Image (cartoon, rainbow, N blue to C red):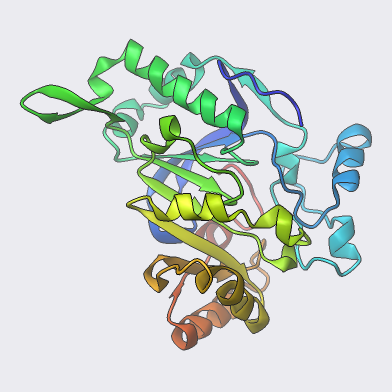
Length: 290
């Protein structure tokens, strides 16, 4: 895994859009997709490494990984073309300049537009440190983002912006980043990802997420066996409240959108979790970064 410079942000793409998944669905959001992931859903590591060396996917190209093709997984990561090759170290000022140029700086600063740290896997240790350092830098150039909570005094390291992080739940989130997060969107991987149990389940990381005041465990399901598995491997052993469990359909195009959404809602009625869909697929189909 490539070394991450904690004094820069390794950004694969960043763009202003609307959150399409989970409990913040519909909220205007600025996505910061960081490069590199510790999992290769639908692919073996050897396959992913070969792709990185020998092939270049088009931006947003959807393909089938080797584990998926062999029936050892039922899906392949649809953002591989983003995090596997693309990624450029950006100075911290880059994001601030982007927000100002797009006329959304004040809305991001006051939390009207959410910041979504995604990937790849943004909780990889180097990324955690880089995000924390970015926030320190941001506070140094704009002290007004410090959250004032009593008598005009800054009594917390928390800033005024609303930060969500999208993680696969395999890496423990350390305190410097932890205190800056307003919401944790954890998408644990099921066996349908092709990843081994050891690769995809880290009890310490899951318990850490449960300590946060605002979290969700968001699962991709394709059949009822997936639902039974998420209860068996996550909800029951980790005592995750159903109000914090969200499920959405395993789809990456508009082809079966309504049928797959209907399936998830029927499962939500039966198993009492929150059933949602993927709004961005409904609006933009396979297009990424919109």
